[in-house]
Length: 128
Image 1 (cartoon, rainbow, N blue to C red):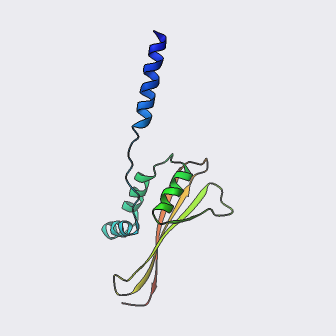
Image 2 (image 1 turned 45 degrees about the horizontal axis):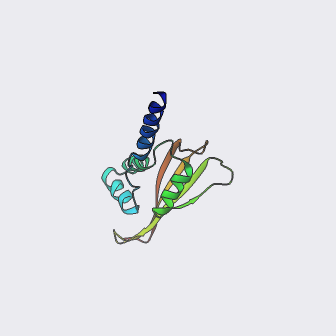
Image 3 (image 1 turned 90 degrees about the horizontal axis):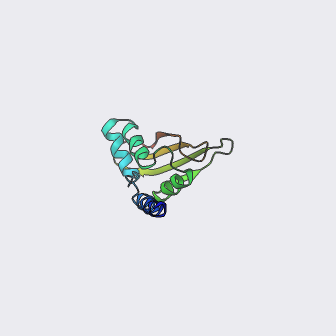
């Protein structure tokens, strides 16, 4: 009887592992900009990134997902447990050449996401 309980338990564990919770995709640059237009800040954009890369996600998984989404990621030399990723594009939407940068700073002191900070910076090259 103990043997059958172990088999059922092992089968249930395998089934549970195969039913992974599907996380939403990371927002691309266009979606980040859309969120920024909606709330005039980084709140909605940060929430969408946290939904796709929740706390506890391994830094390797987060880095790979962000790079696949078009980001460039680096580790600052003097800050262990930190990853900085940049999503960057030029925008001519308002008639001026805007260099728009979204920087995601991930804090992962133990190799897993603890928190992240999102910043948006615009460098204007001309006037509309």
